[in-house]
Length: 132
Image (cartoon, rainbow, N blue to C red; front, side, top):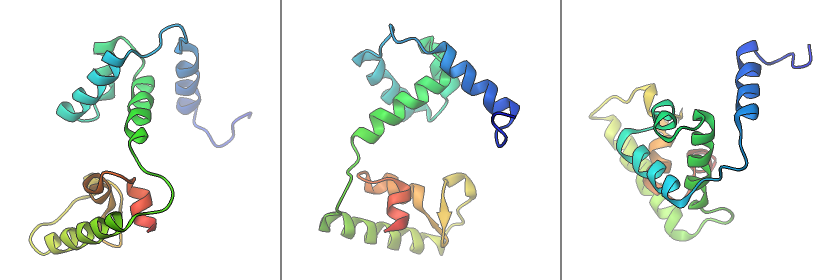
């Protein structure tokens, strides 16, 4: 096997993604704006969004990720980020007393929903917040 740790489905999906990629159809600013608005309103329904745009769902997801990550900070944390992280973690932990959070909220470690923390912080990813 050329790819021993990949399922047949994963190999098939990757091949489909590569062979349907078309460099002559670059993303327009209107399409990028539409992606952000659609995800804000409907969540991450990549297949539905891809059907509307006439593009591959993996390409749509990758484009959203590039747009979203462009606004995130990298490198040293500033004091305001530390304070915001601290406040968000305290808020998340205090909410545990009143409501139960389920695994659907994303990455949970140490009984903290880091996906929600990262979204609340807005300048860092959930993984970056968790590691800090």
